[in-house]
Length: 402
Image (cartoon, rainbow, N blue to C red; front, top):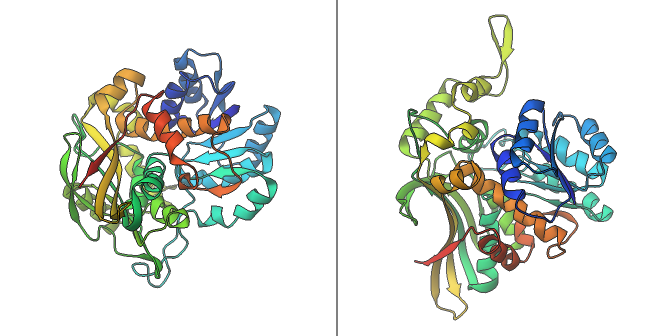
């Protein structure tokens, strides 16, 4: 397996740090528009299987040429979600397996954005599913932690814990803090703004996908690992678009523990237009307001040394157990920033995202997972993944009866 990782920022660097301990691949090329960053990530591994190169994620033609010239078999997209489609299309044209951790972007319904879904996350990719299937190629979409591990938890619950599912609710919360910063998101602020200010999507059997206003339906959810109760709100996320395609249930939601102060900050950004990606003129030049916000905040890849606490990703499931009795469980994965920094020099949020595509790649290479078309993680047997994650990768997951 020859892997091209496009995007060598925080998640890309964590992928390299985790993958260097595994032997299922022959080479991993870290590609980035910033050649120095890509080479630095490769060099830090101390492993000759890694190298860094310059590559423009927005150019499908450049990606196709590089993949063909270098015998690439798998393209792992670790770049900004804005580049999903050029990388996705390039993988198809180059005849490569494709993986990503975030799907193609959405567009709100032009008339009723808080009622009806417009172009949904992943729609542009699923529209091309038959082409991938006909060609015998696999595009595994949404294999990070959320989406990704959360979807695998949903499939595990359906297969092994429940006879009938009422709701699958992905719930994400943390008690992370960053010294010296009032606002320091653990993940790309560009992506965070996109997720949090877009109309959240909910799925219900018989109704399909529909939307609500941002930050709707607040609830307090108690997270394990010492994190405790956190207020969570509806946020647009890929799981709601993926899980109903493969898992039989009555309702799917995603709620994120943003915190009231962060929600207020996002409201202000939106109110004055600083969430916009449309360039505005500033002193004779043009700049995207959202890019300015991102530039004013610390790079999530650089804050690990001053970050403290834990983050939890998980899937809350309600319904009837295999015995027909009422059941409610929370399957979860807790990561401690101190541990991930000591282990791989990566802060907890990006590390928790990065470990999952590496596990998935190993299952694909060993033939444990296989398929063709555009498939989400819940399309595969969850047990080998969860066993490998907890076993050889030494990153345990847990389950609480509630």
